[in-house]
Length: 249
Image 1 (cartoon, rainbow, N blue to C red):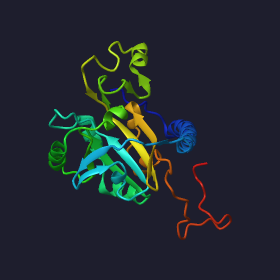
Image 2 (cartoon, rainbow, N blue to C red):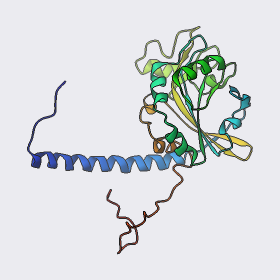
Image 3 (tube, one colour):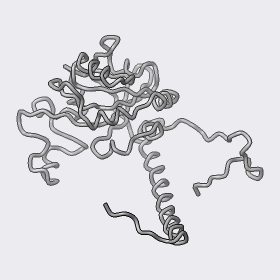
Image 4 (cartoon, one colour):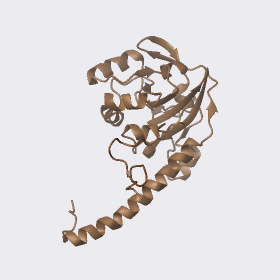
């Protein structure tokens, strides 16, 4: 592994300031992207999907647990497997109770969904010591319709908004799988509840899932965003402007 160059404090500061300019440009670009994400149109979920959970069978609206928004992690867990995939497991390991509480405080529920039967999910969850709600979509069309289980006999092959043919043109000779094969893929989906109606607002797959890791990152995927206005911390107001200075600009 190559280590960074050794320079003087003055040279380091100059290089750091140059990088800071790019970091600020990136954050402003990300803010604009998040705003555009909140303005995405949404699709009414018409199909009556059913899920098995610790309290029995429920529909998609039931996964909201009374809140207005739902963030769902699609966990790669084939019914034939005894364990979920290692990369999904690593991501779930990082879901602290504090992060989940933060998301819930914004009227948003976070759940896991996998195609494995509930008994296998419960066994794996207990072995890992997780508390995040986890539901099984086993026996339903849900995973196929949301393109996280790829099986040409169930639904046209598509992943990360590319068809099988497009993946082949993109340099994948086998596309999204051979005939008769089924595969699990990672992803996250967001939903919004308006009265008794549920709407699909966003899904991200592949490398798009790697940027996630904190409560704000998850909330930024949703239609309602962070749902907070900046509140002035007590004792830190700027006397001339009546607000905390924005040191980001």
